[in-house]
Image (cartoon, rainbow, N blue to C red; front, side, top):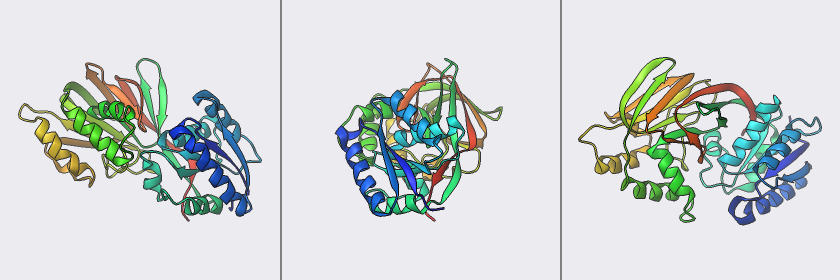
Length: 306
């Protein structure tokens, strides 16, 4: 059903105000297509979350459009899931990674096409991932949750301002290799032990990629109700050189064939580490292990290409 009225959620903190500027362009394009638009921008994260929840609960709103990166899109989808609304979320990718948009076939740097997809109103339910930390915190994720080396790279990348996009994660990873930390991990999937030993990183994917197209869980399906797990184990003969050679293969998803990489799929993933490693979701650091990861099948709806 074509969209007639919607709210645009912009991140006022993104890229020195460019999120609001892009949202204004989207508003003009939607007006030209006869769509009524309400532009909302929270003062901070909590205010943005409140506005998003109000929008998806409003019967006069046909869709909530998120302008930004995977974190901003997660906020909008999380609002719909929290309220229990089937109001779909439209996506205008304007972040660093834009991995969910890439997975769903929504173009980056093509506002008219992204707006056409929104206005057409074709929606489908998709799964959300959930992290329940033993500390008591619970967060949702849209793309990939990662820990170990991957989260260390996220911390470094978030401190960088250049380069942008995929290159930022690659540069951050190369720099982080010099500090390579190995931790003892215990990982189980649906109660079955997968790894109990030294690990470089573990990634739990609701979608295929993170970091702007790095296919860390290349066979993940955002509609199957399951999580894909990729774990890079560590043996005594594996060092920085091995990891440097492994990194380029992640862009093609062929790293999963390396003998030191373990993969699994399931509904519930339990991860512990010594010492406790940071956890990143959708490019944001949210806490530390130990934690349990699971899915919320069909928890939110998203607008897709027809």
